[in-house]
Image (cartoon, rainbow, N blue to C red; front, side, top):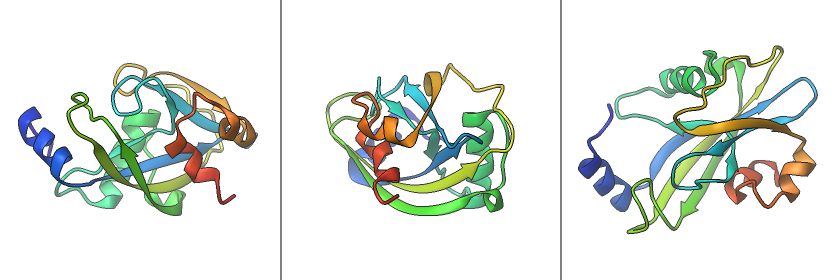
Length: 152
């Protein structure tokens, strides 16, 4: 269920949001990153992903988010659970009035084929594949994305 702006604003200000982040690797071991169009993390390079909706199971959220974010629907059994991560932001999707807290559940997906139809109009304006060492040292890759690679 998607919420109207006023209700969603109250939720963001009052509670953590739960999301799925997709750590997508190609056959060369590079990671897919998109340049974010929206707050929080606007303008930074970030892994694809999104919120889990109320009354949406984790399994169904994974299918929906892979289809929306990658252009291909994957099932959760194709991914490896990395674990939960706290993501804290000083702003929110509506502005600077209050912070955002996500509890992001990271899943790693190893691709066997190229992604040919990545969406560029909702969350990300363009994409790139980066080696792990390159993304960890980049100033334009968001710190919350780098967290997925700090233990590896």
